[in-house]
Length: 272
Length: 317
Image (cartoon, rainbow over all chains, first blue to last red; front, side, top):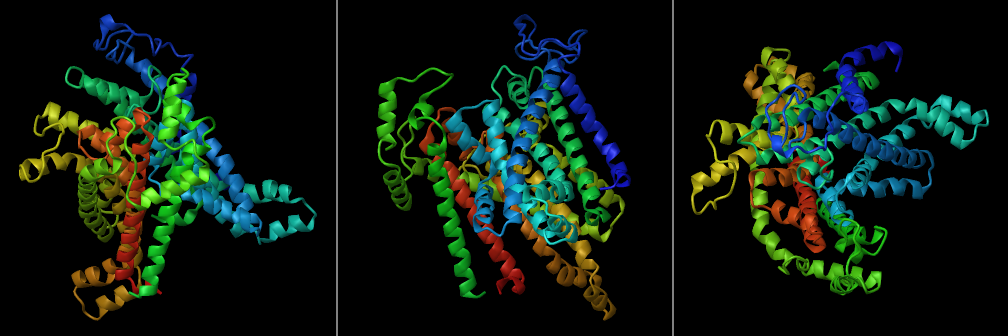
């Protein structure tokens, strides 16, 4: 990827950057405490101080939306990073050595792909109980095979190239070749995989939280907010609409960035 | 279709089913700590040792791992998935009662998605860059971004609460009131179909564009065949294979989506006992349902393979 190919990424990156900044800056923003209840003012209309009104426990909705972004994105990034580290390591070994064991270990993690993701997640939640830590673990496990697969395939495609041969001829150690020569050359597809994993993790986290099996209340999460607002749908339909909008907009922005990133990395797909 | 090819595919599915069962079996044991204690603990409190001991002997956790594994496989082979820890009801019976309803929802969703996504994709490819093509590109991006439970919840809000056109959810057996049954099926089926329809649209459009660029299309048109015949017989037939691949790949998402959609619409499929079991740490029920749906996933992919082979003789080699 040269600098010129990064230019088309600027516009789709902007909304994602804004969401990330707001989530990061949540403690600095002048917002009410997202878990402080005020039952006397439950389902209150929007007013100064609580611009989007209050939820079924009298908590500030705007504040919960912003803090919910923080929860979602923390879980998604932590899980994708863990999956990326493990998956890329497996893929590097599986793609580089002709050792049977390494290739087999990549095959083994692919077993995870035999399960519909939501169901594997529910199985693990049964064992470990709900919570952010369980979510990170489950999502990391789910996305390891994707990283391992793509890395293995990419390593195999560059393994015999001249620049790798040159590094080998100069007497570099295998670890140095893998990390300094091979990895930078296959970073593009891995980055695309990472962006896809983060976007998918946000969707799955919100779904599990919506079922009451993800983030544990009273912590703010978009999925939990939609779950809570369903009960008061008739009195306060807007409570349902806000988290739905924010969640959909976030995923839309992330998907768009993923698509553009893929086009920048692999120009062949960009023609359509 | 050669029978050797078919047998090989069946053996792969059997092997994968065994692998899936083994993973589910081992999941309970790779978790650090005592499994029985783990299942009974909630909120950090230490569970009663007597209860732990009882659960341990009930699940056979006091026996050597290999003996447990053998017993697990034998009972699976006999179609026995154990009994629920909550109400002692046989898990297989619960699944037998509810699986058809989940299957109906999945089939209805897949049907709607194919009926909407494929023709729209064909039309968009034939009028590439046109008004429909451009509008459809934005709509599919939106459909892919909205999570399935958000679509479901918003459909309930809009059609049941605001417009009061439809019931918010529920279930009536087909034999009792066919019309109402289909009405209650419509919303969850639409919710579950939306993502798949968008994926099918994109892949159909791309595959059609690829197929349209082939020389044989020009030849067929040049020798005077009607454009409709060329599109249906020559282009669509060749474009269908990648589309069916996408259909198979997306079934995992679809099956996971049913869990959420059934919950949103109170559709009494496998989702209700599954979620109750996850909350109540009812391990045998969770294992039974996860295994059932995962094997279903494998079978659907087998069906997709067979369908592709039937359409394209090059695959059967």
